[in-house]
Length: 459
Image (cartoon, rainbow, N blue to C red):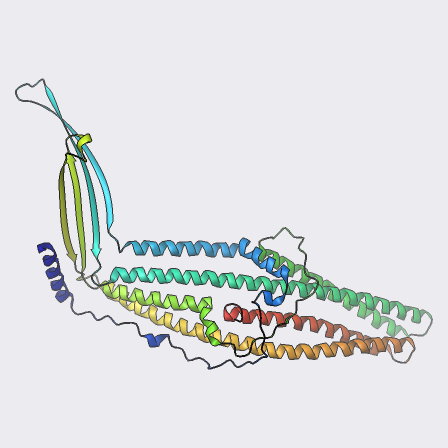
């Protein structure tokens, strides 16, 4: 008891020597962020079954699973997560005593005074356990451990975020590859149609029914269509290669792409709760890093206070190795020491200032992350409405353009319209059909953005 009283007394003197240190508690009001009361976009009610199942594409589900198993970026994230977990265990170990065990053996030969020619041997064996522990009187070690634990949880959220982002990018690349393939097929179909039209114009030119201008304009139209086909072939090849990289297949090649874009049969539910944002990995990671930074500030503030260290040892000694643990004698000791920081050139105070600045930065980052999340959800919800209206209008335009093309070609064969009318109708039909494919892809991509901004499905 006298030892502990001495330690407490010295600690009290150390506090007087270092002065009064004020440690502020974290303000819960810092975590509040002004956000909209409700989403700006509205939609009809529906019951999606999950963000991947919502697309009704079994092949997409297989590809996402493959990417999660083979993607190199995700493997790197797993390694970073393991590092964060290991660091948390290291920091947590500081709260426990350290124990070491050592053994010793000594042999001494000596001559006796009475019989110089006779040498005697003495053996001594020892076994000692030493324990040391810092008395976490002010909570410095605990704060460091809590900071490391929060940083490890932030790494878990980072990993979840990368998984979600990877799945979204695979779906995005899959839809892009399908659209590119459909655009290529449309361009090839257009080339065949224009070539058939060119044959008709050439026949009419040979019979003197069409002027040379018609022939040249038609040939130019075919050449332009072939150029568009080459472009679409390049885009389709690039889209497939990007998908292979995400899946970890590149450069194996030979990937089979879907024949059509999946449809969105389920609408977004009405009254989508804003609480869904709480599961976003980036918001969770930012909040946990804010908690970690706050704990690091507490750790740096506590470093200004004295630290108390206890060291204890327990040993056994014997003249015979066989009797070391039985007939030996015991030796033990307990030592307490206090260390008070007096002058370190302002290093400790500067570390507190740095921690306070880091906390301010983490708080600003957290608030920005939350507001960005709301903006992304609002944008995706509004985009769903506008894209559906755009797609509906483009489908009507495509239907009318195809009918106009058929009518113009039929009237040209009867000599009732000129070639300019035919070529314009063909161009409009191709552009409108291509725009429909692009709008369908944009609608799928926008739904992906909504899933990503919500951190998962719509439930």
